[in-house]
Every structure is written in structure tokens, then in C-alpha cells.
Image (cartoon, rainbow over all chains, first blue to last red; front, side):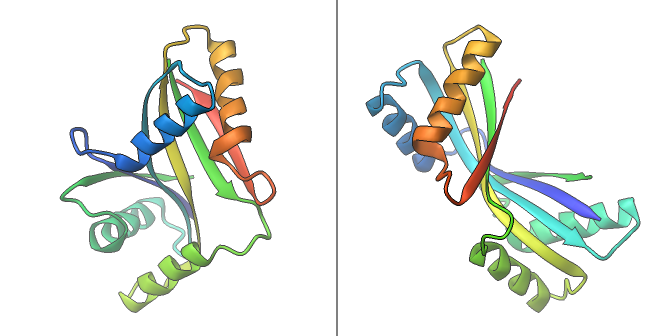
Length: 79
Length: 79
């Protein structure tokens, strides 16, 4: 079973990486870019074959390792 | 208009970051994880209001800055 995980900085948390990308795009002439937020994307392949159990397992991984839940939010899709 | 961009290492390109995550998950007891690939995810807000023009613009950004197309592939969704 494959899980797709997005980890993003929460709204209101400063995103210097996204800001650096916006600025670099501006220097390249892409001056119509209003805002950029950058996050992580992970594809995780699991031996688990039950959809619900796989999702619960991946959420546990996010809480324990993949996201810093103080400043980051995450979403999990099972595909 | 908002664009969602995923940038991933191409199939066959070694992903040490994903491998490090897999190994760390293993140490935490998540030993049912078979494989992890890690990529970047960007949300880009554009002044452009035409869907097709926005997508073309973001693809140009990927080619010029956001992805290293020798080793990375990207996908763009306009939402």
C-alpha cells in the first residue's frame, strides 16, 4: 500500500525557504508570483494491506518523526 | 490562481534522504515500511487568472529553477 504525505509549515509560521524561492523567481523575471510556501512530500510504501490500518500507521509516523507538529501540519492520502 | 507543484527524484536515481527516513522509521519500530521517496512540494500563488497561462508559467518556473530536470521530474496542478 502506498501513502502520500504532505508536510507544510502551519499558516502564520514564517517560511524562509518559500520566501527565498519567491525572491529567486522574481530575479528570473517571474514577477507575477505573489506567494510561495514550500513543504515536504513523501511517498511511503507499506507492507500493510488494510487501508485504514495503513493510514493510522502513517499518521503515527508523522506524529513521531515526519512532522514537527508544533510548527508543521501534515496530510496523509492512501493511494 | 494557486499552483501545486511536486518535484521528485526520477525513478532509478538514488534517494539518500528517503532512505534515511526509511531507516529512521525502522529504528522507531515502523519495520513494515518497504520504501520511502522524499520530494519537494510547493504552493505558488500567481496573479495570473487564466488557468492555461498559469500552468505554462509554472512549468517554465520548474524548468528554470524549481527542478533539476536531469535527475528530477515535476508535476503541476492548478487548483
